[in-house]
Image 1 (tube, rainbow, N blue to C red):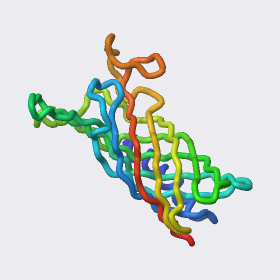
Image 2 (image 1 turned 135 degrees about the vertical axis):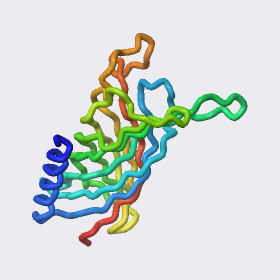
Image 3 (image 1 turned 120 degrees about the horizontal axis):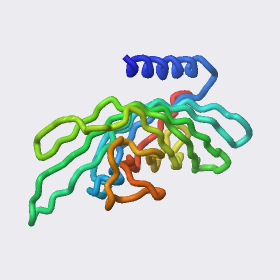
Length: 202
């Protein structure tokens, strides 16, 4: 029930923004993700990242952007062909709402950064063919985004973004020898997103 209420609130908020005089952009990209702390390592999990961005100028050269994104995150164990081992793939899909500040003072490049809140909608752990859910995975995720857009034309841009979780996404006892982020043990989504942005207004 709480999932339905939260998603309904997000969708209602997005409809309110659409009703305003904002500039809308379509987002389509690919995630290359890992989970810091799972002891796998490497941006080996490929997933889709799609959504829409609403922009509004708040002062000269500065825009505020609201996004609604579906983002496929997780991690994947890479196999050594000379020494095969059990496979492992973590698939965590999120519906997330980033709020970004964008600098428009450059002619071709728009850098930006911001924060997001997301809800987990798919939680799947494929452990050598045995599929189940990751235990103790948090329903909510809070993230930080840093990236930039290169404007190929007035309507089309190429986008590169780095995103990571601010808090551990898994509520479980810490590993004494596990990787640390900012001095803490835990699991943290981390990913690079490469994509295109298409302006729907111009």
